[in-house]
Length: 113
Image (cartoon, rainbow, N blue to C red; front, side, top):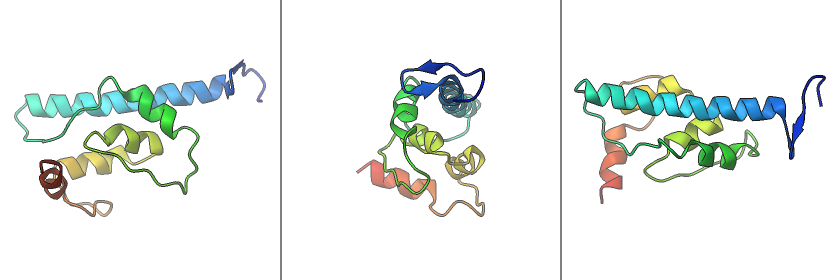
């Protein structure tokens, strides 16, 4: 444990702060989606607001080489695992980037079956 860090259960204060920051990052991402939809952008997705702690708690002890899978509310899990939020937003807005490989409209059509 680093100097100045206190333990809380099995996590140091630094780890708890890191977890909180991930929860806030997830919330800001979801709030940005709401902002864009309110402004008239067509974005079809199920929001993850209120579930941030679930994703962060589930992903905190995963290794970098661990894989995750999710359902129609996967933004939180992806962000908690470390996915770049800019490329995720680009994917939701159906913009091509080097990091996006699957078009969002294909994912949405599968989730609506």
